[in-house]
Image 1 (cartoon, rainbow, N blue to C red):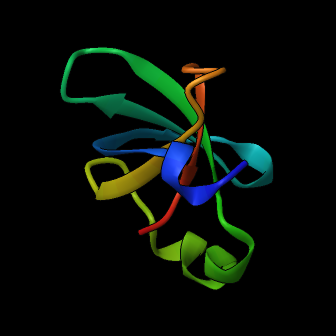
Image 2: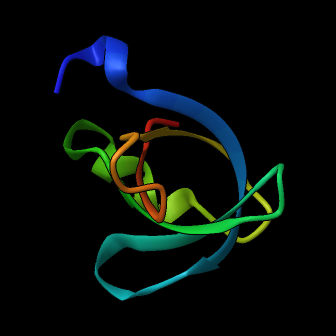
Length: 69
């Protein structure tokens, strides 16, 4: 997927799930399941509910995303 097709959104972490997954609430009220980008996994233990994160989503599946911090 070209970078130009990605959708960038801001969200707030609602819940930290096992295996590096996060439930993130977007500003429009939707909740998505997100995972950390590979290069940012070392920052994952510092994520707590209430943390603001930047998400990258594909236009094909708007229920999942990747956290870019």
